[in-house]
Image 1: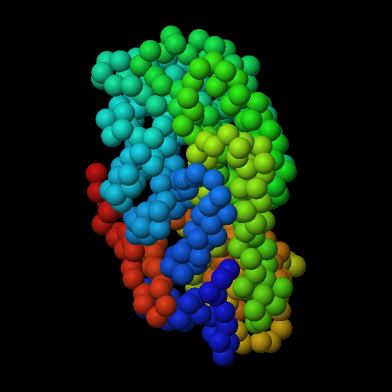
Image 2: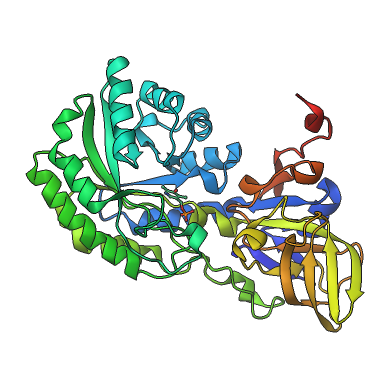
Length: 422
Ligand SMILES: *Cc1c(COP(=O)(O)O)cnc(C)c1O
């Protein structure tokens, strides 16, 4: 993670000492760096400058209103998957013409809301959905901009829950069905075919799947154009992976490793090679890559416990604040906010939730910690807060944004009273 470093054994995010934030705002606490966000956006944006393009931020990775607004100010559009996310994007003043709407299960009211706002395109995931959109658009006297989400049948060899582009996944439309739809698109008289879309999945670790996608898209684009459709854009989805690995030596600059699994300009180049010459706008929908390494979760050590041959560090955050380890066996580096040397231990870092699946790390080597110490769960900006829950009647954590020496609360800790509201 950039902008994260130890100074005199205290962990700083930009110019702010993290243990002070834990003391001032309490834990669990999400902390984000504005400089990291700006830097990530600039790197992804600049990768695509050689071609007409839009960066549509996938809101589901982190939908904090301040974060969405900052990304909008930087020039981002939005990839939304519900009327709730559509509403957040519009509230953040994102131009509807920069909003794409994906998802296998769009309700009628969600389709109608998006139609009335005049979004850039519906990423349509089935023939039946297209029929419904056509019907609803006709009833509303509108023409619906359609981008067909193809299932490219490409395996990213990632965790099965976040791989979306294989033929047996629920997402997208099989290529032969896409061809059938294109062949009789004139029957959808209230729809205009404006784009093609694919999303490979998340945490893509290398360039090969994007290169393959470019080839699949190139062929299909030619067929669509031959059928007389004027495509406005090609949406290559999101998925760029990030580096979640453990810093080799936390006391040195190893915290400043590269944030991305690979250079985003490789994606732009692969796409450019296959379809760049066609001059069509490229839409890229990063979620994780934009936000994961801009955020961390602060948690306090409550108890230390040892059973036969096993050590546990019991902390005040668990699967309610950060479910990725429990849900995907995901790895998050965990480092103390204050280094005090001494021996190292191997322990499970677990939360207070009444589930054995509630853990942040298993068999993890850590510096020796004491009750009251604060730990930072790194690379927690994406799919952290947005996957949080009120299980065990736990209020959702607060979120703060640091910018240089400034600290801004961008979401208050949920109060106990809200858990009682009907
Ligand atoms: C989740 C999702 C994304 C973002 O994926 P990341 O791996 O976070 O970049 C982009 N597009 C669609 C359609 C998605 O469902």
